[in-house]
Image 1 (cartoon, rainbow, N blue to C red):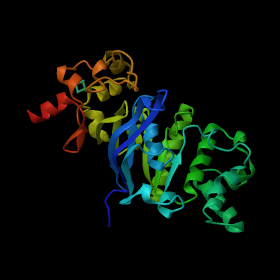
Image 2: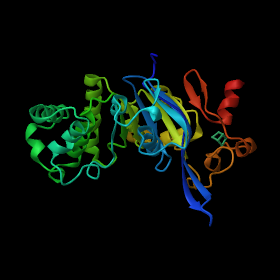
Image 3: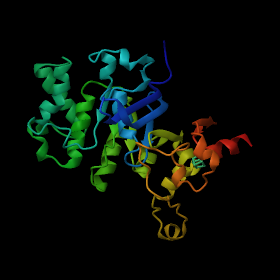
Image 4: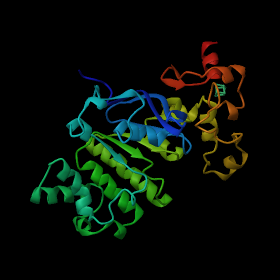
Length: 327
Ligand code: SF4
């Protein structure tokens, strides 16, 4: 059956048992991803943002199958990924780019072998065809044929990330999960990698889930943005809407921390300071997980967990926003 969305994540959960009793029964659970739902249309980029430890990378890794989900399902082109065999063509169509380009590349392999490895594993090209395809992939990411004989340590961070991108492209994916692909790079190189990802998206019709904590860069590349806090999505909207009219108090605080490149405006603007630390995810607060840091928290916030409710394409999980929508 034809489907509008390339990826649909429904009520995804990934819980880790972090302590057991004498009999091996779990006594403490970390709910890294807790009932997360979103979809991505073909050719779209969805940004997934939040502070470190909010569960955004675990969400990406659970979608691609690096972690077994505790609950929920992931549909790719309308089919549940869990029912597809690992060598199924649909599984190849989802690839991942990792945060640390050096750690994700085998230092003992040449770049040609790193980029060619997926071709070998899936039997997609051999001999001369393989060499030609590797050269094609390297040129696609702005490297040249001669780079194929070098080792990862001979490259800069930005070039290594290009190698990681070429490896992901080797199997002609439709969806790429970009897990903080620019966080480990120098600021001057970050824009180059983001521009490359945009160029590839235009040329190859790629769809991205772009995971990052840099809100300015996410704004630049994403059509829609989802904000995560302690394993849950608290706000999801079109990029322009979310950045101009953030409704969740957490999103408002995150956005108010982005520096404005105008010294006069920067000196006078009001910044929302978050009180306290991020709560322990093993023992989150009752009700709304954000209530211990929220200046608007009420008694209801301590008792009831707010649902993610959508109004005109702008979804927010907050009692205060829900009440103002109903008023
Ligand atoms: Fe703040 Fe309550 Fe909204 Fe949570 S539900 S963000 S505590 S107002």
